[in-house]
Amino acid sequence: MNAADVLMVAAVVVPLAEVVKYSKRVPDGWGVPVVMVLSALGVGLWGWSTPDVLSRANAWPLFAGWVGVVTTAAGVYGFIREKRDGVMDAERKP
Image (cartoon, rainbow, N blue to C red; front, side):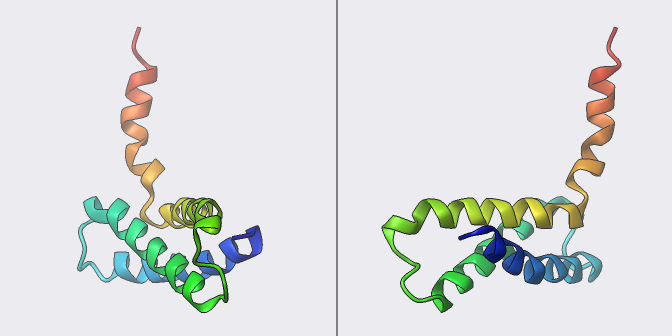
């Protein structure tokens, strides 16, 4: 997966993750697994729809693309914002 493909898949996965989050059907604590599964679904569908992509030779680019989509979609659930208090507490120790 090249950068353009990662952005194309992320452009679909991010709004889908937003819909899942704001539907209030899934608790915020499930954000990480939801984003990981939606990203895997997006990358898998992209790979399935692109000729000659699903092969062992493309395992690493597909994995790297999946990581890129996950980190892009993670902002929807505010992974960093939700954990910021713990990080700030750790930095304030004397």
